[in-house]
Structures are given as structure tokens and as C-alpha cells.
Amino acid sequence: MDNIMEGDNENPSRGLANNVHHSPSCHPHRHINTGYRPGNQAVGTKIPQISYASTAPELSDDRRYDFFSRVVPPDSFQAQAMVDIVKAMGWNYVSTVASEGSYGEKGVDAFQQLSREAGCKVD
Image 1 (tube, helix red, strand yellow):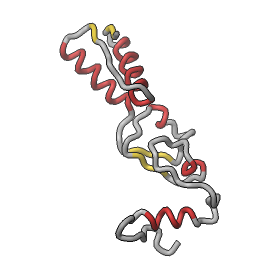
Image 2 (tube, one colour):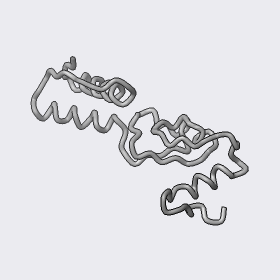
Image 3 (cartoon, helix red, strand yellow):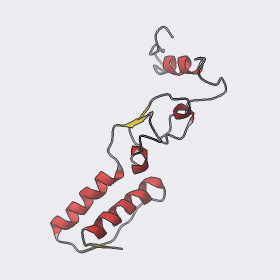
């Protein structure tokens, strides 16, 4: 791995992907998944992974995801900010609408829990 970041003009990340793929520590039939979930082969082979979009609170568990990092805060921070807005507006009853899936459902769960603790009823 002379120059791990050396790629080409069309795909500058190709150098990293090729070096990782040809590394003796990687299984030759595994591919690196650049998706949002850290449950892929990159984490399994102890390759550090940095996410720009993963917000699920469970990803903060360093014992389980010790090679995972993110550059955005977990959903719980956004949920707390929403509760602060509800309290500042003096509202005591709110409804939620969220997308189906981990991001929407976990975010609403965090918001509902924090809202109940703040004495606000959530529908």
C-alpha cells in the first residue's frame, strides 16, 4: 500500500478501495459497503468507518461499534431540541408524523420519551 489515497480522475476513492480489497487482512470475496449502517463487512474487518448520515442512538455504543464514528449528532439531540421548542411555545399536547424506518421511528421514540419526561402529551 504505497499510496493508500491514490485513485484516478474519475474515481479518487478507487485507490483506497483497491488497496483495502487487496489487503491480505481482507477476505478476497468481501466488498466494502458504503451504506449508512455499520453492520457491514468494513466494521467486521475492523476498518474504521465514518458516517455523514447515521443518527441512530445505538451507534453511540463504543463497545459494539468501536470502529464506527459519525460527524452528525444522534437522534436524541434532535429530539431534545424539539422538546425544548415545545416547552418554549407553552404547548402541552403535540402530534408526531415520521417516516417508516429506523431514522423516523427511533427519532419519534426519543421525542416521545423526552416529551413525557417534560410533562407533554404526545399523540
